[in-house]
Image (cartoon, rainbow, N blue to C red; front, side):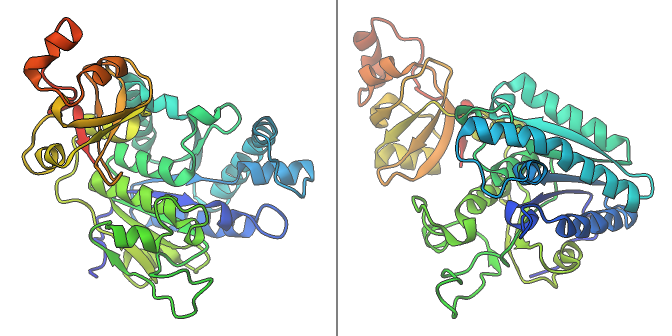
Length: 375
């Protein structure tokens, strides 16, 4: 692999839970090591650095002297509310100690914050303004203290990828406690080999990560693979590496680290399609046949009712939905012209039959090409 350009000017770093937890619930030494390196990167000319940080629940457990992670959502939220303040105190203290004038800004998000196009743009504008100040490092986290299960990103890997796509980052680095993606589970197979570069996330790569439906995936790699898919679709390089290595970020930038690098798509999505693909929460699923699949992937067509074989979920017109093929592979996300009841009535029908089935015809397409993002 070629080293990353020295002109990396916008970097997103995700610090995982496994890095920031240890024998005492929260591992302050790991955080200090990362902050020192980020401060060095700022001095060396990396203009914009954003950190997506786990650790709020761990800090809350430390503050409350809890030895067992809470299981119920209200308990998690309460512990996170206690821990979020302590986590940011640690960040601010460390940046003031090592940052020569650097300070931090806290940004807490839920999935609903990205659901609205206006909110989506506001978040990007806020982060851009923070970067323009020059001495601010934004610390982003999911708002664990208020987000319900329906409003959660599910993991900070996904959040980091969506933020990297939103702010036009050059590089997303996901730091965890393993060196990257292996061809087999390294905890079970001593001969497992690190995959150094991924140019396309294929079914074989998904199997190596534990499979799309796996509960026990390799080092939590399944969510990191989805994050890489989001980042690379937006034209962002993505690296998964071990944050336990000294100077790991510098080593990644000079191609000296043992890690997995995911190459970005040559054609990055426009921002509106990034919002459709990754910003909005989906409300349902449309299953399509092979003919529709080929039309979407290879002919640049819109999705017509004739190609829809099955529908899942209840939603209104304008909702964001997933589009999957006969094998269950997600092909696209898009905004529907019709609600779920109407689509159920016209699925499998020709365009000329829509009016007879519904009593009216507002659109020929169920999802217009302009409102669809291939993923």
